[in-house]
Length: 192
Image 1: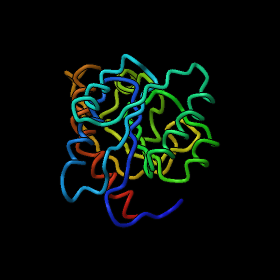
Image 2 (image 1 turned 60 degrees about the vertical axis):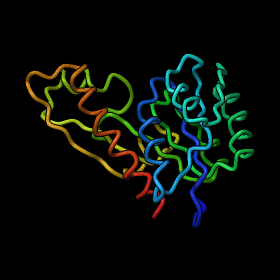
Image 3 (image 1 turned 30 degrees about the horizontal axis):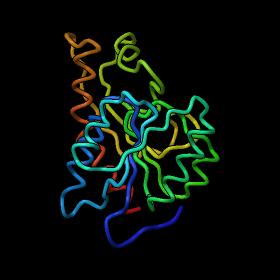
């Protein structure tokens, strides 16, 4: 993995849905001392609400709606190279990137997941956490590998689950800390 120094790093954020973490990263990226600039937003879903954050902030965005992941990845790599992207942040991107894509990109790829990994990888996290009567949940920012939610952890933050919590309240509680944790993890990842 290449090391980067100097000016703000051109970054792409991959989304599939609401883009609330994208919005949080954009806000942080506008601060003078934040190490990245969001140069590109990529979505595999033309209806992703998060595209509006790109539009509102005049950030270039691409919708790559390929059914086959191999097509999505090859098109995406060309766009990343063209835009000099040196960091990818996955923010609610609902696909697993291949080993080939990760190796071909050569730089760091980060992801945020709404659980305390390695517990509760994959989908329906909050539902599974509540079903198992966990006392805590939280979120994790980690490096991306070709295995689902399995890369080395950069940062984690825990939240207490109360009796009154349901999927909706837990999601809301965790999302709030995701928005704080992801920017901190980006800074940390770029120092190493």
